[in-house]
Picture 1 (tube, rainbow, N blue to C red):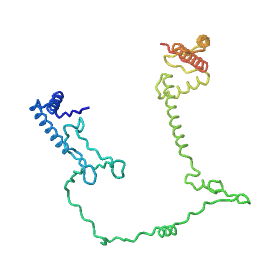
Picture 2: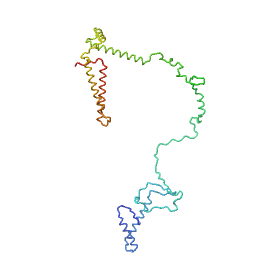
Picture 3: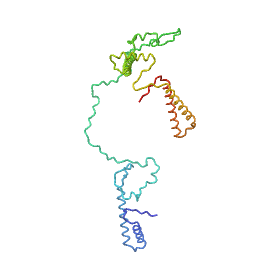
Picture 4: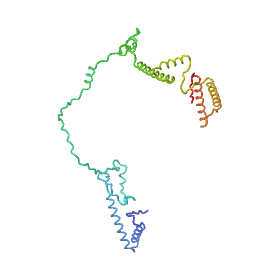
Length: 314
């Protein structure tokens, strides 16, 4: 098998084969003398070019066996492989310290900067104590100067010597020594003050309502109107409100009967629902019935527990 080496991409492989074929034919018959000379020159040029490229390789073998990586340019044949691959002799394989050693070429240059100050001379006295501190002695002195913590007060309640803490045991009068002992707490004073203010507001609002019910301004006749309202409340008559009337007992019973009938109908509808709530419509209907039942029960309770109900006349 013959190997063809391509140096430039603008040439034809078939021409190279013809050159070598012509050279072989010249050696055999001697008929193509001009072709043999041209083939010889081509081979010589190719050999010279290979030698130059081999010398320009980026790996340099040093005398100590270390291969140095340099920044040489890429050769023409690197994409296709070397024409002459240097091989080590068989005796160089599987021997100690005969492997491939690599070392990258160091071309780094440090930038010039300001000068570094020189180190002080050894033995120069800088005024500091050079004796190392004695930590053991320092800890002993600190322990001697430390004030011992007094033991907590305890009491013994059994002959066998069972001890308990005396503080918070109830045997020492602690609370009588406090500053607020025997005084009214602050929260009680605040509560009383708040109740007094609320009572004053309620009295003022009650006086305003009585003035509106009597139809007179609160002045000289304030006492008379207040007395009449008190007498009406004493004899059981509810105070009259302008523009309002008191609901009669027959009307109250009619409303209660209608509410109870509506409650029974809603309860019957709620109990007749299916046990399986598996759709959105069923869930919405159940929620509406529950809210209606709750509202009807609240209305019935309000009418039954309110003795006086005012109804607007307008």
